[in-house]
Image (cartoon, rainbow, N blue to C red; front, side, top):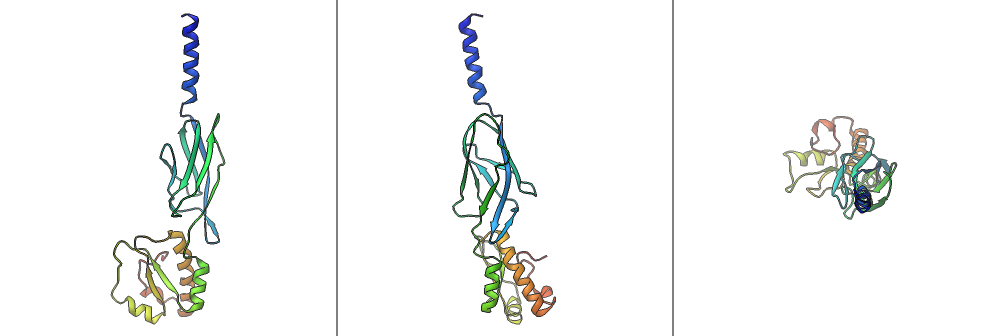
Length: 193
């Protein structure tokens, strides 16, 4: 091999090494639902450029692997109409500890539930589909327990937000009526076990 061939091989291997996908980014994801900072349940995290998604464990840990050097944005798509972008740059090594906190758009929280109870307008939240579901006898339950079923349909807030709201309402119903309401309530109320 002559000197020119060796130099070209070195340049080619250097350029090729710079575009290899051998980097990763990892960290922890938490979402602020009202005043509660929680690990979200099955969030969708995407990475622009590659459109990859990350799986997240029960502690909120995530990893995107096999990335080339460059500038990227992570988005968490489930909790806001306009998801925030979290920008990072991979240069010469992987990134660990890139923790993210997302503030969820929560139109219902435990604070709103307490306010609704105070106003005498508590609700039990449901998340249905395109068409609302009405069960036979639900109006009897609503009248007996002075509460309203409220179905969001296919555009419901995050489940975690509805769980917060309904948990307060469950406690209110139990304190006011005992446990008998649980036998009569619709079984599709969010957060009911």
